[in-house]
Amino acid sequence: MSRRVLLAEDEADAREMLVRGLRRLGWDAHGAPDGDAAAARLGEGWDALVTDLVMPGRDGLELLAACRLGCPGAARLVITAFGDKERVLAALNAGAAYLLEKPFSAAQLDQALHRVLDRREHEDGVDRLFALRLSTLPLAARERELVTLVLKGLGNAEIAGALGLGEQSVKNALSQAYRKLGVASRGELFHRVFPL
Image 1: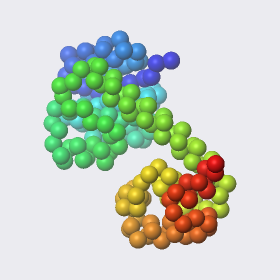
Image 2: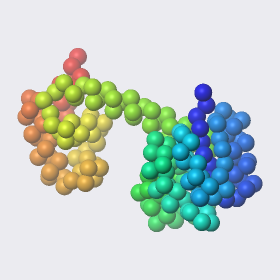
Image 3: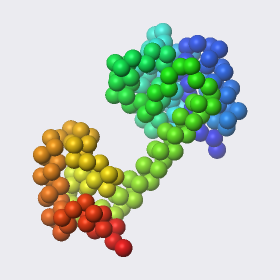
Image 4: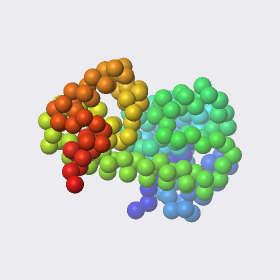
């Protein structure tokens, strides 16, 4: 079964060319002429939403926010001709997983969609594996969250940023988790979670 993509793009020629191109590449692609029309279709079960940032009516940032509520499982990609830093940061903060700057081809959009969706599926599988392994260990929920991020290779500063904590708080919480598990390093932690 092909994956479903909703493309919000106010330029009719570009929208039709991309939708046709994605369909030829195996996607179940549908177009919307603006953010309002796309928002009205969010409940239709999309795998991905691709939205232009600048559109009349509801813009891409507003559509990303609506998608977070109306279709939370959809990967969100942004296309724009205006790749300034403020818009890019706003799009990423609104949940965009990828930003593609115009002009681009349907093949390039296909590659971006595969990259985002394949990475997401891999991460979901890894998260399930970590959750299963950590569920048998004597850790609190927050400690499991911290240990998962360590196992994914994040440093203390990255973990602090991801969880909105201070770096010292992360160090203290990890020290406590390490004591509970009887380990002293990240390497020992890995072998405790995944014994050979």
